[in-house]
Image (cartoon, rainbow over the protein chains, first blue to last red):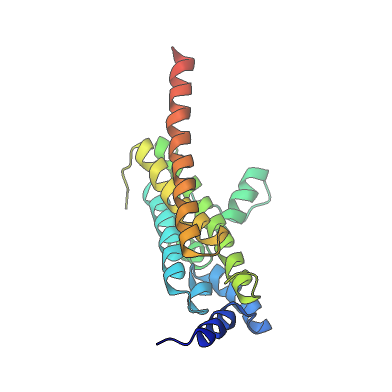
Length: 140
Length: 60
């Protein structure tokens, strides 16, 4: 029979704030590799779902021939697009290294792809912030 | 590597991924996460259908 006191202790230990280094490492890891910030805090299912969501959006965007923005100081929307894309962390650097995401202005769906890639980065930033909230004990 | 999706399917895939992340990050318990994710998905998908009818109405 489960001891209710032990169960309470386990629950409070899970929700308790972790070390301050984890509060820094978790969001950085989550940004660099989608879902990793949750994985290292043993939230495996959440991490897996977040990773799948970001990966699917990013690669679906590339598949639709969306554009991956480069660093630029020109048009404001291009700068914001770059910031959004950068949110994908490793996926962004991989896409740049492999020269993926050149874009195709002749396909209407390619514009959707560009938005998919930007939103994948933005969602990954939300996930990284969530990993930080778990690390500081604001969320269980 | 190309990926062929209709506009509607692309919108649904977007809704599915975004609502998954919203559900996980904006709520605390698994049950609330599931409910909020489903709520966001319904709003995304419903918004697409509603916007489509509005555009159809403007055209006609």
